[in-house]
Image (cartoon, rainbow, N blue to C red):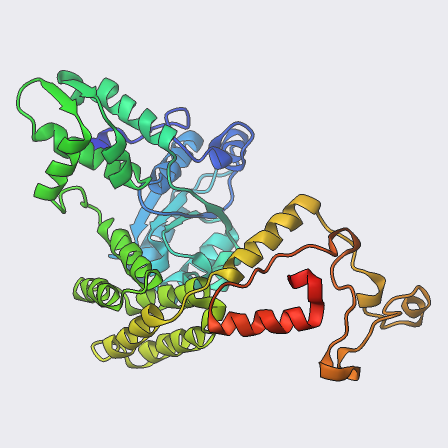
Length: 422
């Protein structure tokens, strides 16, 4: 019998749960489907949020041939064979067959190169699915030929709707009298992943005897402790462990960081995946409290690329311990998010005239660059002048945090700007 997650896979947009920014009324993918014309695109998001399902719905709604490849098991020959079949099945004026590639981030450069011509000429419409940032893993020529759509983890209301549908509509679960007395543990362990949620529900229900089944938080926790991997049929543990690893670094626990890293290494994780996450952590969690952390994380990434396994575990471990034991600050992370929020709210504020470039005589006559004070002409290489737009000249986005490194920056800013940094 098919797993519950497969039995409940939506067959149309009306059955599809979540991702309203893409498939809701007037949203981009719904409009493409309604117009019967779609372009190649890549779906980027965490596992269990409906990437594969959405691709299948697109193909069904357009009534076009649907080919699928897994980047884990397919080679260049498989890609070429599928393209050849798609070409022979294409009828005049019909929509291009859809080629769906799951885990496209695992395709090698040569595999991705073999897709370019077919995508460019419209032999196939490519839909890729990835849990990794495509800008890291998908070659630029292919990325430029595809739209990128970001899928989000499912919200609480989405997950509750899915649970209700499962117990009331699934052909097997309808045979049981299932009462969802408590849902907190189900939602918490699912982490916004529909597949994981349904796997846990199925695990709990099938472990109960009799027709009456009451779902409680205690029961869910108990069943998962007895079967720690039972709800992890498609490798979602991969994301739980990397999350635990990063949170251990953020929480300054080098022993936990090494343990979770060892779990990833022993499980055959891609060393680039581990190294990339540490580069992000160095910038996000350590930041200005220890700027050398980002340099070391980059060095570890480069080293692993050069030497590979098994020696690569050593620089990765060195970096993990260094990051975990470093002082922490997320002031730069918070600062850029605050600045982005301001830009989205206030729009494109004009650049003050004295900060504008004046490469032509006309621009100079219009006052471009007029009044600009060159800081190196002043004592301490600093003089006060306005750098923000007129409407934002008193705005503050970066707020230093308490670490020796940032304290020095803060004191220098107080010396320069006075009350602005009080």
